[in-house]
Image (cartoon, rainbow, N blue to C red; front, top):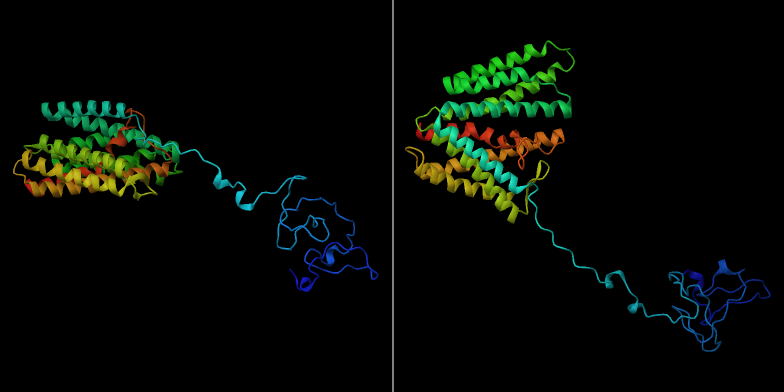
Amino acid sequence: MNDSSWGAPPHAGYWGPSDGGAAPAGPAYDAHHAQQTRPMPIVPDVPAHGGNQDDDQGAARPGGPLFRDETPQAQPYGAVPQKPDSMPTPDDTPQPAPVPQKKNAGRDLGAAIGVGVGLGAVVIASLFVVKAVFVGVIAVAVVVGLWELTSRLQERKGIKAPLVPLALGGAAMVVSGYVRGAEGAWVAMALTALAVLVWRMTEPPEGYLKDVTAAVFAAFYVPFLATFVAMMLTADDGARRVMTFLLLTVVSDTGAYAIGWRFGKHKLAPRISPGKTREGLFGAITFAMVAGALLMEFVIDDGTWWQGLLLGLAVAASATLGDLGESMIKRDLGIKDMGTLLPGHGGIMDRLDSLLPTAPVVWLLFVAFVG
């Protein structure tokens, strides 16, 4: 209401033209409506919605709002208005109960288990029969992993890391680490990097720096880290050390998956891997420490349970970081898996992601604990 409406007659309705040609202002009338003198239709015995019927005139008030801050609501002609509290609202409409959604692991669990069992059988058979055969298994996994990584780099980023020197140098790194230890692995790594630099010179110089940089990174990330598994194998109980390394990594991943899938609520690194949770990390640490204590006490020569606790903790940390590291690479490339070679798992690199950075950690702790 503006100031001119105060003091108007209590029953101010529509007024006809007066002698002065102007109508007085009231609660339902102001100067803006002064020229609108056409009478409104009269609806007998039906009060207008939002207003009161005039007792002395027997007519309804105008169809507009009584006050300026009221909003008129349309009503069918002759309908009896409902009370405001009986009007249906969106909140009163019954909504169907949400259908609970089952958690999904995101992969074919049956295929993943079948492939995992098959890979485990190949590893155990080669590991405990002839050590040299297991070295060959490592070399094959390294070459396939390099092929997957370089293929994705070229497809998604246009980076042409030369595969031939990488594959030959990677296999040589694994064999050198088994035969000559860490010194042989470092020499093979240096020669592989040099071969990459020379090989790439046979092509146009555009993109040379990014290609050789990616190739040297791939040589360090895949075959050089895998060389530590071959070096574990050279010990007298090397087969049991490698088995402990593999079991602890698998147990860590299994604990993270089981606890995270069932209880996971707090994201660990949502920008890198939204599926990983802090609860899953706690499960990985718990499972790996328990398994580490048992394995060091009963499987490794001269090992003790408290060393196993530290070993399990280190494995859980390095395996999680390795998984996050490859997730970072895949996010940068815009892909979910590095390959499709292993049903239910993705590619070889999707299985090596937590093993590769864990290998040097376990090798070092074995050397420190039991020599």
